Image (cartoon, rainbow, N blue to C red):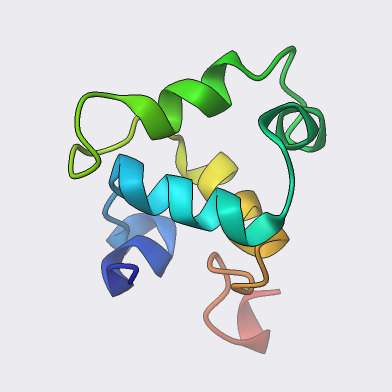
Length: 87
């Protein structure tokens, strides 16, 4: 289960744990290489690092923008928008 604080807009956001990043990546159905391409990354090294640091309860180093896109790809919505007035 995802901590609701990691699904908030940037100013209220708590970075997800490595386990949460792993879980959301699993929801996308994409490989690390596919995600890296969609996120505009040179290779999948960052994607691996975001989910594999230390223990699964450790906070991930994933930047908010990458996390927001990852959540969108996983079907979790546009976490950076509260309502239609933010568009």
